[in-house]
Structure formats: C-alpha cells, structure tokens
Image (tube, rainbow, N blue to C red; front, top):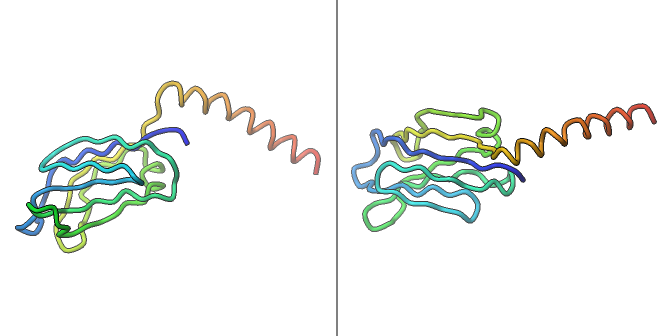
Length: 124
C-alpha cells in the first residue's frame, strides 16, 4: 500500500496532572515523545488505527485514544484538537503523504483501471 501517515504532536491541553509523555503507534511501529514531535508511519494496511497513549513518568498508561486511518486518508491534512479518553485534548496535525514515485505510479494506474472498468461494462 503506498503512502505514509505523518503525525505532528503540537500541544497538550488539560491532560491529567500525572501525564508526562505521549506514545503514538500505527500497526507495529510506535514512537514516544515527552513534548512535541513529528513522526512518520509507513501505511501498510487500512485496518490499523492510529493509537495515542498518554503515559506517566514511569511509562504507565494514563489515558488513550484512537483515530481511524481511513479518516486521515480521506481528509489528507487534519489539524485539530483530539479528545483523549480520561480527559484532556491533544493538538495534532495528521497528514497522508505520497512520495513523487508513489503519486506517479497511481497516475499510471488510474487510466488502466478506468479502461478495465469500461471493458467489463461493454462485455456485460
């Protein structure tokens, strides 16, 4: 599957006082930051959701939330305050990113898929 999801953690708002860091994961890839940070996740499938976990200073989960991967792809760029279960908000910017090579591959596939669809409808 082409593309990647870029996650920028911009700010914490009203999180529980014991919160110290954020862990962001998608599939088997995960990153951790004590404050702000930008992370990139290769997109391997659409079933995995982006999981955000707020942790205390010892790495224990304080609260968490999730974002559907398909929602990120549909929006393209999504800059918003995301509610965290257990209280608080996390300001993040989420982006679906394609490299130039991936974009060109998709451009080449679109006419082919249109042709296949048209051929199939003419046969029926």
